[in-house]
Amino acid sequence: MKRYVIVGGSIAGVSCAEGIRSRDGEGEITLVTAEPVSNYGRPLISYYLEGKTDLRRMSWRGEDFYERNRVNIRHATAAEKLDAAEKQLTLSTGEKLSYDEICLCTGSHPFSPRFEGLETVEHRFFFTTLADALALEETVTKESRVLIVGAGFIGLKCAEGLKDRAGSVTVCDLAAHAMNANLDGDASAILEKHLISNGLRLMLGNTVTRFEGQTAHMQSGETVDFDVLVIAIGVRPETAIFAEAGGDVGRGIKVNERQETSLPSVYAAGDCTESLDVSAGEPGVLAVLPNASMQGFCAGVNMAGGGETFDKGIKLNSIGFFGLHIMSAGTYTEPVYEEVTDTGCKKLFAKDGVLTGFILVGDVSRAGIYTALIRNRTPLDTLDFETLKREPSLLPFGRAYRAEKLGGAV
Amino acid sequence: MKRVYVNEDWCLGCHLCEYNCAFANSGARDMVSALKGKAIHPRIRVEGEGDITYAVSCRHCKDPLCIRGCISGALHKENGTVCIDRDKCVGCLTCVLLCPYGAVLPGPDGAAMKCELCLKNSCGEPACAAGCPNRAIVYEEREEAK
Ligand SMILES: Cc1cc2nc3c(=O)[nH]c(=O)nc-3n(C[C@H](O)[C@H](O)[C@H](O)COP(=O)(O)OP(=O)(O)OC[C@H]3O[C@@H](n4cnc5c(N)ncnc54)[C@H](O)[C@@H]3O)c2cc1C
Image (cartoon, helix red, strand yellow):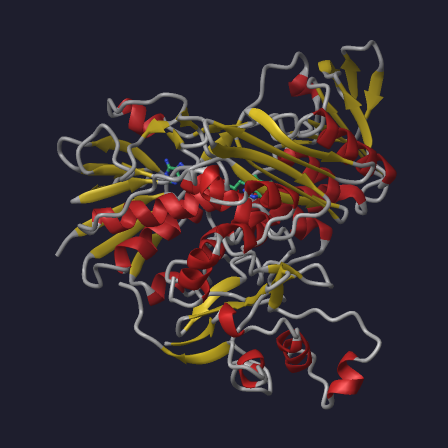
């Protein structure tokens, strides 16, 4: 009987256990996670603050997941040292776990540059865990002036979540545009207008140079007075135990398409990894939930002796703010289609005869048809791309494709 | 498992499947009160133009990307059928971003919606197939791809 150990009990970790159980009903699975609570959809923490979900509905695979899948779950326990030669993992409790196969699903941790005077700010938070959301819920009142540093999707989701709970919400970012990492100028402009009309204050191309208690001194010379500070500048892959064990780390734990790392019998999946982005043709940190889940499942299957590959990884994101839907995927190479109005936009990018990326704001229906083209690197000359550019549907794929997909089991 | 299969050669483009779907999922007792004068929100859609028309609904894939990517865990499988707990769904539409067939749709209330083979409504078996006048949509058992 094989002994499996999984480190990290979030999306990748839970999916890894699913992958193992899809092939091995017998092996012993131990899941060690620093989180004190059972698995939850991490992106739900802003929806929790907004009142669109609650603790009961936030469970990703259910509280009974571990029981159903016979997983020994160790909450509030950290893995501290990996010894890949001895196949042993040392826990914060001092205990040593021996394993045959291990998967690191340690995700990411929030990152903060050193701001002068940050220690003088009484109420400061990150926004990546349920604990962060619960602490904000406790602290923020109808009178609170909230300042969020970082206008990426985490900072803006936090802003949306807090909007109706707080007196005011200001979001600043050094970047000139909201969601700078995912969008282009046109898409950001639509988003920014929408955020402002929904009551957020944006200070873009401007950031904090130093804090003095409840005052932020901005680069522009302005000052912002606040009661609650949220730092949402970004997250970094959590690679410490793997790096200390001598594993190969780039921007994240380097994995191949089987989710294997440079260390024997050590797999990794999710936000902690760096893997091939097929739309860019180079490795990247593909830190979004769907990838964490697909990679975790793939790792699990392979740990149990299977032959699964995760070789279609791309960055992708679907998100909404105050009712405006935004999707982005892949790499923005050469623009091949563009539609921009006051309230929505659509941009497609292609290179070497395949679709590599898109941005959609507003109308997002059937976007998955575009996503599949990118993931599968479908040659565009095998379909009617002119029709497909205008509207995603199965029409441009031809009769044989439809007969296979709609007339068969997939 | 039994699935909905579509044969476009026989599709008349009559859109009856859309009406039957919307009615079956409306919870109403008669079709007129369910649909008359209202915007309908079927989980099956007729696509195409000119001579080519065909209906698209969830394929209930073997390893569904929508379930993998669902941020809330609302999408799940029940005996092979891909189902959505619309009470858990927060409407992020990651499922719409991932479905290669365009078969998961944004619902009128913000939550995503999709075909659940009418297993959960009063119809009991897919209303689209039952009502298709030309058997362009059928609900049956076929050999599964390995
Ligand atoms: C506010 C917010 C909104 C988001 N919105 C979206 C969205 O809309 N769509 C989307 O696709 N993605 C979104 N994401 C990203 C998404 O949450 C992540 O991609 C996903 O959670 C990654 O899963 P993971 O399992 O790899 O890592 P994580 O979810 O980060 O989990 C890692 C786990 O490992 C544990 N851990 C770490 N180190 C150790 C150790 N040494 N020992 C034991 N346990 C350890 C941690 O406690 C944690 O439980 C959002 C993220 C945030 C924070």
